[in-house]
Length: 259
Image (tube, rainbow, N blue to C red; front, side):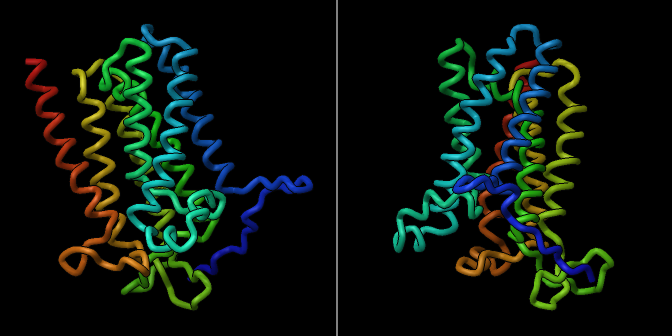
């Protein structure tokens, strides 16, 4: 099996200022989203470069605030009660995708209201960018040695030793390839052509929910939560089920309205 590499979580230190890999991955995701968003304005000419920059700002605030609040409420509430200031320890990792998603939804609604757009007009436009940030975030998880996988049942050549001498699935890398690379390719392909309003957003919700539900089978459940339903479902799977159902329903409505 592969020994987990000893990676310093700090990329660069300049006196009291430290640049962490985790923060750098978030920056990479936002820059990548900005670049792709600007490219899409060549097709969606009703969007300006300034609007792309603004919606990324709204989305970034939603990711950071919602992601941290979601992690605290869904995964780490007892620790928050013991030490409320831990809410701001973002450099240590601990971000909830589902909380970040709700934060982004709020940001998109506020942006749309300010710019005279409906929620789905905004979400359809930005949905194909999001896997760039997801993939970068999962690399940050790997570098921070977060999300260790479950022990492998049959030895595989890419199993990792995270320091406990147990061969484990590299679940954060699985999520990088599914939620990042594969998800981006699907969204890029589907959004190349004009689609009915809400359809791109629906495909996003359905695909992410499915990918997350699947990869959770290889990820060690949070020690303080364990399996929270049916003795095998994790918190991530429980939170992904509504996304899958919502994606199917919204896609049906989008196609029905387009007939």
